[in-house]
Image (cartoon, rainbow, N blue to C red; front, top):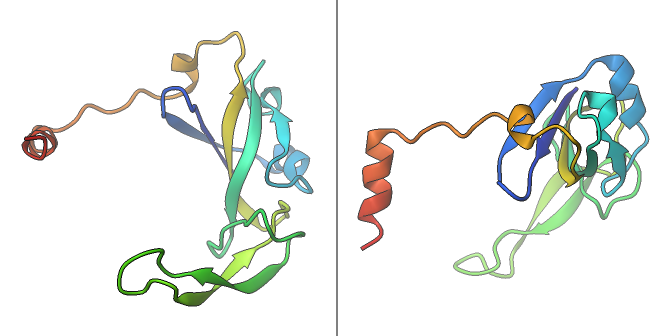
Amino acid sequence: MKLVYSDPKTGRTGNSEIDANKAAVLIGMKVGDTVEGSLFDLTGYKLKITGGSDTSGFPLIPSITGSIKTKMFAVQAKSGEHKGQYERTTVRGNTIAADTMQVNTVIVEYGSRPIDEILPPKPPKAKGEAKAADSGKA
């Protein structure tokens, strides 16, 4: 299972692969629950579960109770040509199960270790990216 954690202050994210013993702690938790970061080598930090996906890539949806895979109608577009149209999509419920492959979290309480040690630095922009970004700001 992969644990993805993000810092809302800086916008940086990091991830770690967790083994089956640590993943067992997450099984049965729901989207919106808070978990201690010390279980995942983030001592002093608290993480809030914000979502995830299963082995097939279907997202966890907070409004569906349980860990079932189901189909629902979702808004296709809020504006434009397809405004008001719906499409049937497959989603997973809000509970983490054994077949959940990725759990997304956000840091809600910080520990003693600096965030720079936990999260990797942002890569520098390439020259082409900087020019493209600057040309749009006229």
